[in-house]
Image (cartoon, rainbow, N blue to C red; front, side, top):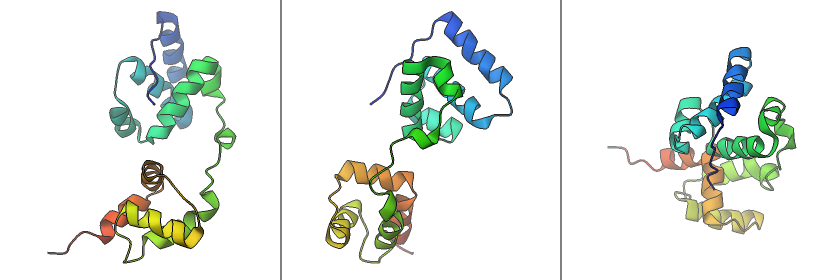
Length: 146
């Protein structure tokens, strides 16, 4: 889901002040720039490339800003994020994905069901694999050598 940001002049001024005052705080800078770029109408795809962040971070930071304002951005704690139910299985999922028989997300989905007895919706598994570098490993394994 994409959240919209429409900053007032004073809100934009406040975010720009945060940028000026937090040049040494990379995480705060990225959060403030993210909101400013959303305000300019930038697409999430562009923001992810410019700030080198994951698309989920854009949604998280935007929601936090809309709910708690600049204080939320300044004091955001990653530890407060909900943990994925797959976190305990991440290394097993990576191992399954690196098997020669697994070449697609669908095949990975099936193997996870067989080996770990976990059902995962395709689009959610795709995003999970992209986020944790598993998808790139699938693609590398399956590129034909000329």
